[in-house]
Every structure is written in C-alpha cells, then in structure tokens.
Length: 249
Image 1 (tube, rainbow, N blue to C red):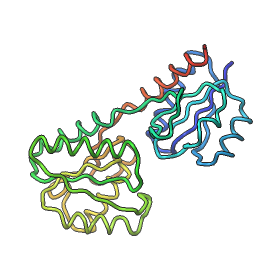
Image 2 (tube, helix red, strand yellow):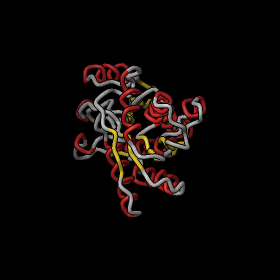
Image 3 (cartoon, rainbow, N blue to C red):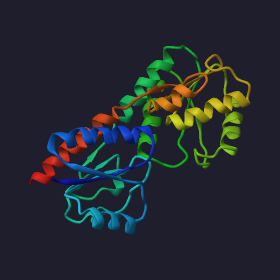
C-alpha cells in the first residue's frame, strides 16, 4: 500500500474539501493518506517526510502555508495546490483554482442587483488568489462602466478587535447602496460585523458576497452570507490523479 502525505494549508472547510477529493482517489488506488498540519518550517517538513517516508506528497499552499522549497521533497513525486508562481521550480506540477471565473460569478450576482456602487475587500497579506479575484472583479465592473473601491489593511483577518472597526469606518465612507465582494468568507463575516457597528442594513445598504461557501460560517451568520464556492473537491481529485501518474513513472 502506497502512503501519500497531504500537507494541509489550513483547517478551514475549503482545505477539508480538497482533502476529501484526495481521499476519494486514494480509495480507488488503495493509498494510505496521512494529513499534516500547515507549516512554514523546513525542518518540520523534513521531519514529517522522514517519519512517514511517503511514496508521494500533495502540498496545499492556499493560505501561504507550506511554502518550503521543493528540494525538501527530494525525489519524492509531488504536486502542489495553489502554490505561488514564484515558488515553483522547473519540474513542479501544480493545480490552480480558476480565480477569474470565481470573481466573475460574484460580479454577475452583484451587478444583477443594480446597486450602482461596488467595492472589493482585500485579504490582509498578498496572495495569488486574492490578486486574481480582485483584478477579475475590477475588469468586469469596468466593462459595465463601474468603478471599484478597495479596502486595504495590514491587520490580520483574525483580528477580532481592530479589524471590524477599521472596516466599519470604510463602510461608512462608501456611497450607498454598495455591493461588496470579500476575498474570502472569513473576511465577509468581519464585514457583516462592521456593518452592525456602523448601523448599516444588510443587504439594503451593504450587499456582501464572499468566496469559499464555508457553510458553517455562512449559515451561522445573521443574515446568512451569500458566497461563491470554488470546486475544492475537484482540485483535490485532480491533484491526486496527477500524483498517481507521477508515482507510476
């Protein structure tokens, strides 16, 4: 039985769905899949590889986790998911989500509301999927004669105290009604909190769309958060199928 080591990028539902795609392929090929917590440590990555001695590795990098050099994996067949382009080296394989299609879907939904004003809330650190979603959203809005306002912050999305108040000030400054695309559901939930702080109505004053469709987060919010769901299960499936080909060489 082959052992495949899956490096998780986060504990969020999006990564769990990637792992679900991997395990569906693993059942087909009879693999033993071991998952590892996100790491930025080269030494930790080496220790995990020495521990499991995997026949193959799948490395998810969606939240800037696991950006250790490919050389750490040695000659072990491997594939990445959403690895930054500048971290790839010759011979690396990678599966990417279609961030443009995701942003386009959100843009179409917001434009259908005829709000007249639109904005994009950026992730707090530079990530490839955030940049692609932002640029695609802006392009669609430009094609429809609409300008986009942007929220920029260096505060981590996990900031429970400062970020909602910073977002609240931003929401107050925007013309209303406004449609906002948040880079991810974690941020859309912060925007919802910020709207309550600013005493703005959702969706009448502020319409929010997130990305990821994290069901636990979206359905527990009041009002519930609308969200676009990339096919994370399929990305895990594709990565595992490609890895199977790499291990067969």
